[in-house]
Image 1: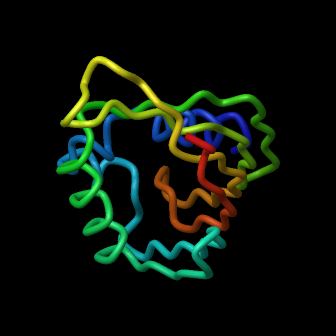
Image 2: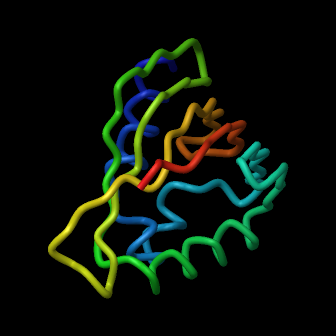
Length: 124
C-alpha cells in the first residue's frame, strides 16, 4: 500500500480541504485522530474537532497551498516535510508562509486515520 498511501497523502496536502471543508470527508477516516506538537503546545483532535479546525481555517484564508519538500512512505504510513502558504481574506494578492511541518500520516481504508505532526510558525 506504500504507493497508494503516498498518493492519498499527496492528494490531501494538494487539496483545498482547508478552504473548502466539504472535501474533508473525502480524505479523513471517521476514526481519525491527530497528535500535534505545535509551538503553542501539544494538542489532540478527533474527527469532529479537526473538521471544526478546517472550518475555522476556511473563514480566514482565501487560498492555501503546501510546498512538499520530502515525502517517504512505508506500508500504510507516509512521512512528509512541507511548508504551508496562504493568501488571507484581507490581502488575497500576497502569499505568505504560515508554518513549517513534519508529519507522519497513517492511512486506512484509503483515508487518513491518524497524523502525528510537529510544526512551528514562519517568521513572517
